[in-house]
Image (tube, rainbow, N blue to C red; front, side, top):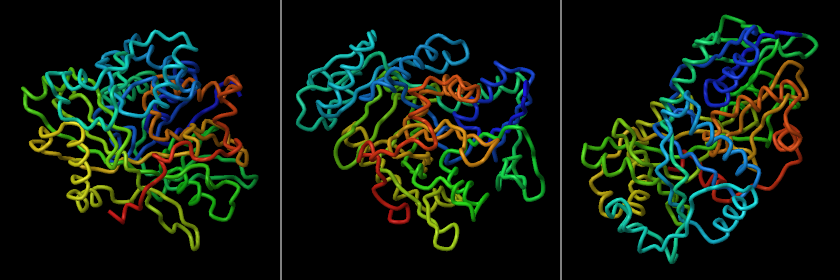
Length: 420
């Protein structure tokens, strides 16, 4: 099949990057990108800002992130949305040694240092003067890391994909369709229409497990099982005035990996928005079929966010005090929400054919760290479709890879959303 047609479900980073990559490599192919809206309120891909870093203990992801950062720095499509303001990371020596060892092994020219805490408190006119550095004498700072204007970058890449021939369809995908032989043939949308293509790619993030279960309730071979689950993080936004925005926009991102309220405060973007993200992970366990439970995002996110706004704000305020000290008291935290992503046990992506449904592929599993790879993810997916994905990536991202223990207890869901 020289020019197969594609349906990509999900307009997050996996779906959009894949749509653009297919359009660039195979301009004669018909590509349809489907999502219920252009700005999903609880999707991990849409956000104000996201950290872009290669600071990984895992050498594979360190290498891939370094490659992605080069695209952020140099590609005209992504470069306007990338800002290299640095990153402060408060964590133990084990993390720092693993990260810096990877840089040495990879020959990476990263501008990092172990900065004395007293000096870190003086950065950005004393912005972090009252931050909680625990008992550490020094802190890891990487001036080669930064952040991206996440929502704006995502929207621009969607526009670029459409310019190159991708069709964007706003619709609610209810299930995947199969023929009598079990081949995946399309998707059912809006309770009345079947859309068909030669290849169906699920880039559905936190909703992947539920979609597979709804589509084939009696065929457990198609279900995600323990391969992935929906995990939520609490985020919010502060609209800063001109003076505070100028102070924050050139400051490094600050990530606090330890303590009761882990998370980060990002630099402010061009709109004066300061993002705060609390890394307390949540699950939303739901009985989708009799006796079958799995974590999935809530069906009415706006109602949930409105109902839980005060409780979410409490978490974000506690975190911001750990980083900004007394300055946090003046912050008016708005737009509090729970941001959902697909988490895999080893925090590896899933970029793979589904072994039990011909015509179906999976591209998901951002695992709360995938956003920085936005410029390169689609190339990995197309390489996989063409049988060209490098063996190490193919093995790590396969649907049926040997399972591993959860890579970090920090990311294991700490409570149910309802318990908040």
